[in-house]
Amino acid sequence: MKPVLLLIPGMLNTAAVWRSVAALLEDRFEVRIADVRTQDSIAAMAHDAWARVADVPAHVPLVLCGFSMGGYTAIEMLAGKMPRPVDALALVDTSARPESAEGAAARLKTIAAIERDFDKVVAGIAQFGVDPSRHADDAWMGAMRALLREVDPETAMRQNRAITTRGDHRAALAALRIPVLVLCGRADRITPPEHSEELAALIPSAQLEWIETAGHMTPIEQPVRVAALVGALADRMQGDKTP
Image (cartoon, rainbow, N blue to C red; front, side, top):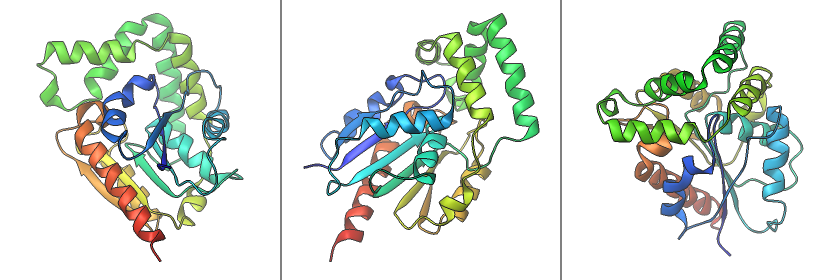
C-alpha cells in the first residue's frame, strides 16, 4: 500500500490549490486533501483533518503537508494527542509564530474589508501573494483571483478569526524527530522567508528549501518544484525506516 499524503489547504483555498501538486504525486502516494472551510478554529481544522485519515492503518506511512493556514493546522495536529503516528511533515509558506497583537489588529481590518468589498480583498491578496513576475500575465492573475474567489466571504472571515486564536506550539515542534521539510517562496510577502528560517532552526530534523520565482502561493506558482521536494521528503522518510 502506498504512503498516504494528506494535503492541507490554506486560507481562501479549496482543494484546487493542491490540484497540480497532487496530480504529480499520485504515483507515489495515496493523496488526500483536507477541507478547512467550515471550522471556526485551527483546533477544529486539525480535528477534522485527522478524521480524513482515520481509516489509514498504523503500519501505512502518513505524511502531512500543510500550506499557509494549512501549516498551522498540521502543526496543531502534531501538538495534541495523535490518533496514530505521523511519519513525515512538510510545512509550506507558513510559520510557527503565534498571532501578535499587530497581526490580530490587521486581521480585524481585513475582516472589515471583506465585509465591504470581498472582490477587492481577493484582488489585493492575489497581487500581494505571488511573485511580481506574474503580475503582467492577465490570464494567469485572473485564474488566481478566480481560485481565491471560490471561497465565500463568510468563510474568509471565519478563517481570519481562527488564525487569530491559533496556539503556540513551538515546544512541540522542537521535540519532533521525524523528517521535516520547510518550503518557502523566495518572494513570499505574506509569511516572509524569515518565518521559514525560524521554523527550520526550531525543528532538529528540518530541511529548508527555497522556491525560486514564487511568492506565497507556491503550490500554484511552482507545483513541479513543490511536488519534487515532497517526493524527496518521502525518500528521506523511507530511508529512515530502512534497517
